[in-house]
Image (cartoon, rainbow, N blue to C red; front, side, top):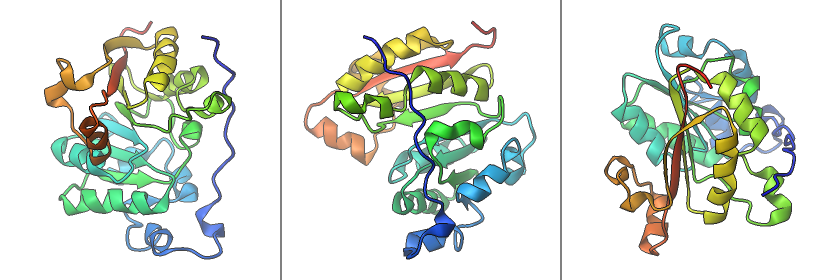
Length: 237
């Protein structure tokens, strides 16, 4: 399938310019300012994110793109306490819900940013990231909107440069069409395939999968979850 050229999406409207901020907007730079970052403050930490956790340059730093209501985000932070975790979300309410859920779970290794995932290089430096989790991104089902899908050749090229060798991307979607779109793009990239299945919950990796509320809705309908994991190998490719 021919892939249209990726178009870089416009920048988000900056939080500080919003005329009528909601309680969640106010909380971003208020109550949760120590653990949540708006667009402007996020860029200030490029290349130095581990310092916000009090970690050394060698310690692992993972990223979840699109935290939604934060169930996986909180689970990952609390179950992998030896790793630092950054969440990325554009909507204010789920952003605050995510960091609040992680904090309530006792996680001290979680931070969250409001930023457009198509512009990751703005806030992360080369090889600053370890594992990356992309779960149930917007599938943009209409063909004319495929250019807005996150998984694109240029995006994976950028992500490759931002990740450290030996790290992986976890990709899950409930959209078969998006999965069929994404898999050839992963295969053509510098990443190497570790896992791929068209029905995660009937695969060898089902027991280690964390089922979010969103994911459970599709399972109740008997709809499979499509999953793959690709690695930036330690030896390169």
